Amino acid sequence: MVIRLKDSKRFVDIRSGDRQYYGGNQAWYEWEGDRKKEAVARNAGCGTVAAANITAYLAGSRPEYGGLYPYSDYSKKNYLLHMKEMYQYVTPFHIGEIPLGVWPIERMAKGVERYARSRGVKLGAVRHHGLFNRKNVIQYIADGLENDSPVAMLVGLSRLRKAKVTYYDGRRIMEKMSLHWVTITELSVNERKHMGKVKASTWGGWTELDLDDYLDEWIYEGILYFQ
Image 1: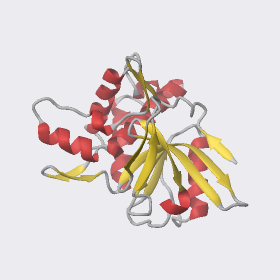
Image 2: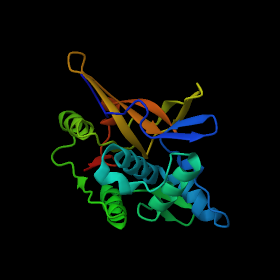
Image 3: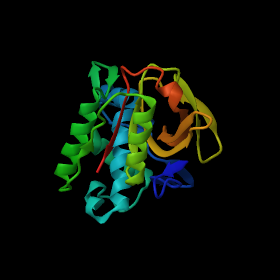
């Protein structure tokens, strides 16, 4: 069984010259004259980027969500403006320049809801209830994707410390995943083989994560979609 967004192949198709990206990248953040803010955003802005990805995708998927992305195209320049605006609503915790990230999950939920209200769009978080186990997590992700809504997933301190990220230019690089938000675009499940995997946007590319490895630890984990 494979469940995916209607446009999971392109997702949020960001361009910069001849370069192409599968969603945003926290490493793009820059604030001239504010190196501390820039450092925090680059090190802990993964949740903010996930929120930017979700709202940008929804804006292109349904007319009623169009106001969530006010720019004329998905150029890297415009997308960075979108990411920086989202940073005002989904801001990582930090102590000085020490990044702590977007946590708890309600910080993400309420921040995106405030952003949507500021754009005149009715959008609410769909909270995950019940036990954080394999069956419930798979069902929740499936519900989001079937509603054509990307699912934000916070990877905690599980076995998924790093994962191979694929980029459009052919590079495949091991990137940090521990205490890191990604944006799910596809879900693959094979119950006979007890296999569950997701394809997720992260670092401007995409990766595949095993849900059993993900569920190895649950304290600093969470999943969230909006509709």
